[in-house]
Length: 128
Image 1 (cartoon, rainbow, N blue to C red):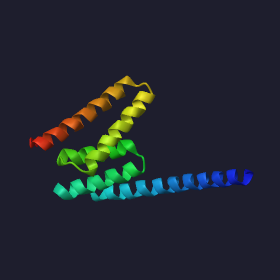
Image 2: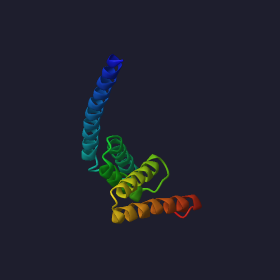
Image 3: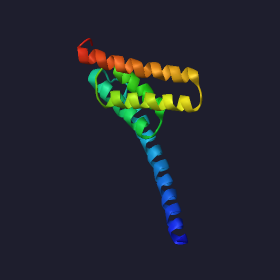
Image 4: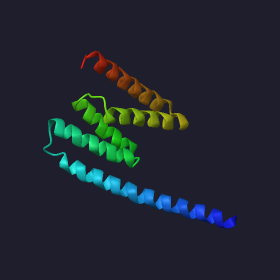
């Protein structure tokens, strides 16, 4: 029985190491893509912003992911991965604010979620 416990501990340590390396790699890739933003316009810029947001989202860099997804949706309102990821990020931030008992941030992210829902309704109704 004792040997099984040690194997589980080793697996957990390897997973943590892999996650740390993967996070660093994802952040590095995102930062490289940020450098490519200069000179990009229109749909090319929106696509690149979405890629950067996705990389930061995967790396659990929530604030950075929000920043790039918000810029993307400000340029082109569309349903898709950016919209769903941003909604998920707002909900995570809202949950963190609730856990920290930060009413100001809780209200802020609740309002952001409501804005996203309104944007969705407007897109479906053809107002955008």
